[in-house]
Length: 215
Image (cartoon, rainbow, N blue to C red; front, side, top):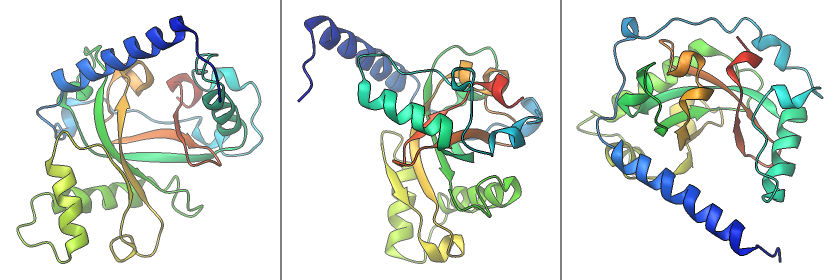
C-alpha cells in the first residue's frame, strides 16, 4: 500500500476542498447557452491525434502530480495509446459557456470509443440532443430512462453510466459528470458545437487535452 507524507495528505485535502467549493458555488443554472453567443472553433489538427503510439506527449495534456503514481501511469498510457474521442456536452454549468470565466465547474458529457463513432461529431451531437430532451420528457419510456432523467435533473449528482443500447442504436456510449477547467477548453469555454476532444486510456479513464494540441 502506498505511503503518503503529511504534506501530500494536506495537499490532496486542499485540492479536494477547492474543487468542492467551486462545484457548490457554481452548481446551479445548468443548461446550454444559445450557440451564437459562443465562439465557433475548428479542430484543424484533430486528425493528427488519431494514430498511435503518439510522441511528445507532454504537449498533449497536463501531466498529473508526481505523488499520484497510478494516475501518472494512466495518463502516460492514454496520451500514447488511448482512443481519441469527442465528448459531447449534454449540459453544463452556465459559467463554462462564458469565455471570461476562470472557475472550474461540472458538466455532463457523453462519448464512445466505438471506432465508427468516436469522432463522429454529428452523430454525437444528435445523441446529446436526444439525452437533453429526455430531461423534459414527462413520460420516459422505461424505468432506466427515468433514472437517467433523474440524474440529469439532480444538479448534485455525480455519475458515470452506460447509456441503454436501445437509446444509442447498439453503440456503447458512456455518460458522466466531469469537472471542466476553462484553460483546457478551446477559447476558454464550451464551443458552439458542444464538442470537446479527449483521450480514453485502456483503463477507461478520460483525460483532457490541451487546446493547442488540436486547434
